[in-house]
Length: 152
Image 1 (tube, helix red, strand yellow):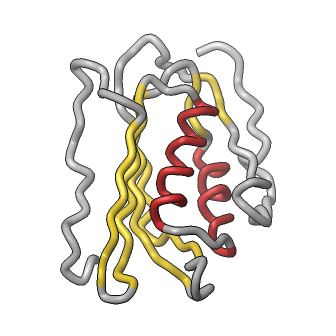
Image 2 (cartoon, one colour):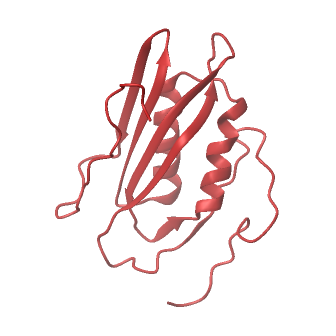
Image 3 (cartoon, one colour):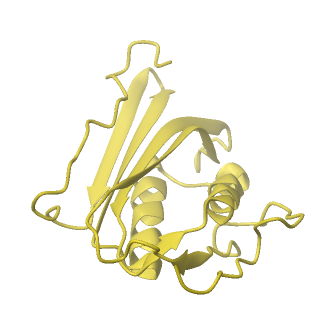
C-alpha cells in the first residue's frame, strides 16, 4: 500500500471551520488507484441558511464518486459540510458548489451529487450535478432518496 498518509484532521481535535471557504479538505492517496469503483457519502442532516430569511434549510446530500489518484478523507469532508451551518446560499448554489469543489480539488474520474432539500414554502427542491458522463462499466446504484413524501 505504500507510505501512510498524514491527514491534517484524522485523530486530532478539530473545530468546525468558520465558513466553507475556510474549510480545508484533506485528500490521501487512493490505495486502489488502478481500479474502477465508486464511493458514496451520505449526509442526511445537512444544514445551511436561507439567503433571504436567514432561517435554516435542511437537505439529505448524497455524493458519489469514482476515485482517481486520491480519495477525500472523511473527517475533513464532515467538517467541510458542517461549515455550511452558518452559510447563506440558495439550494442550487450550495449543492453544485460542493460538487464542483470536490471535483476540482480531488480530481476523481467522475463525481455526482444529489441535494434532496426539504420543503421551503411548501416546495421541496432537489438539485443534481455531475462532472460528466460516468465511466463505462461503473456501477451506479440509485441514490436511495425517495421523492418527497415527508422525507425520512
